[in-house]
Image (tube, rainbow, N blue to C red; front, side):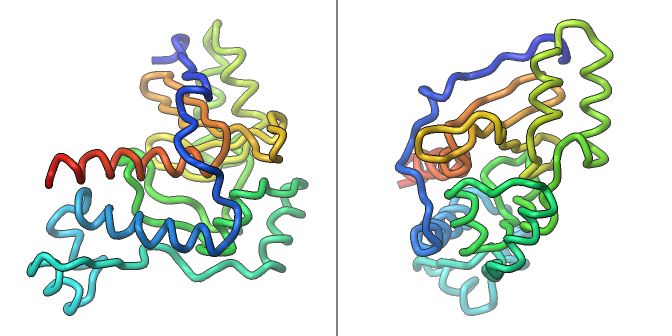
Length: 212
């Protein structure tokens, strides 16, 4: 619901150390993929995510660690994206792209995928982002949200958005990250892209414990 945005403070979402290197991200994303297949993937989805040997191993209760991302971004492609946007990405986002240029299976059911580096845009310039910004701007009381939309990059999107704010930079060089649900006007703030991504991992870990 517009006009009623609530922002959760970053202190509530500092769930893990910031991942900055491709090696750190690769290890984390392998475990993320394993957890996703175990606790989130629907039965019909598994056939698209796993090969026959992996499906058989999963049926037998064995560990399966699929790679649900993409090939690493090349440094020159990453730099080209930064030049196109006029920014240098924060360390955790750069490390992510250098491990996987996008990610297709997220714990967040309302976000389809993390964009490849070449598809990252200013929220104000994306078709969906522009539409949401115009709707929120037409209603009194949404000024703070509208300003956030206009200054943030859109890193992931589905029905909801993942945003990074290059004007809110921590001492570690990380940009504030937001999960935004237009339907309800809810905005949840995280200290970094790494923390935002890790929140879904923590949720899956908790559900894994309940399954054991």
